[in-house]
Image 1 (cartoon, rainbow, N blue to C red):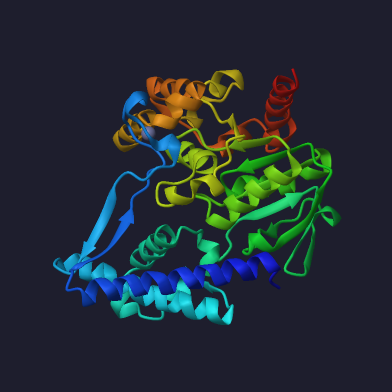
Image 2: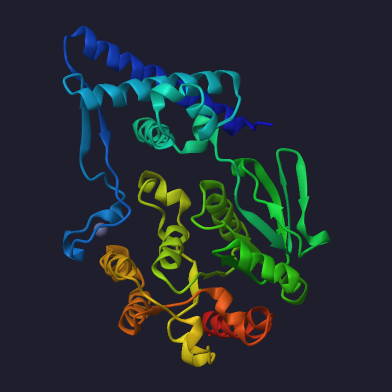
Length: 364
Ligand SMILES: [Zn+2]
């Protein structure tokens, strides 16, 4: 099903594709080897705040692709092939995954990342989001709790069984009729933690919506979360492992990823609050020593790099303090370690106490 707006957007993107190919043909016929210029975007930098321009969503320069360089010719070849596939998808109003596109010319594309970059390049050139190209992800995220919605004519009634997982819909733009009686949204990094909460019937005992992107979240999971936060205006909390990977996932939800920096304004969730796990939870919740794992050399350098990101200095100084404290202690731990006292400690004590103090803070 496609609304009027969707169909207008589709026609507009097809018009831009024609315009882009026409301008390349003009360059060629004028004897120019300079084919296109693709803006570069960054979601963060490590510059001092005075020298940072990430906050303005401005491009950080351009990649000018010419026919004089072998690597550029290859990138143009891939770009044009992907563009042709997208034009066909839009023309027939069909959808396809990035993986399907890769398998149309695997020997030419050689790797999925090559296709992914071409899709990002096309979004930047056409100034649109990935879903406007009818390119969808194979949905990875899960949701449960106090929520009802429809997607493309299908009704999702999570409320009937609030502790059962539903796949997050792939076509988030088609999600309508969202209703909820939840008090907050809880985002958890891992599926194992989501399952723990499902087994503990967390959503029967707490009025909430729980979401996981199962590791680094894909675009539908992030767009869906953003949609819920916008429509329902609920506080959203995020629970990740106390290690640099968990922290990086947290920043992907809140600030967007580097690869899709051009689209960050539609993907980031500035309201997202970090619930834990913090290095200080170790003493607070009396975790035994054996739950702690020493930070490796790689963990330490990763953490030091994270600390340099401009958005942390600008927007969440207190997150930096927690990260510095982890680095000073030189240890990390997984959320699962909280089960050491008792298997339901996470859902019976840890989460309710954390959420209560966050909600008190928000309402004060
Ligand atoms: Zn910056």
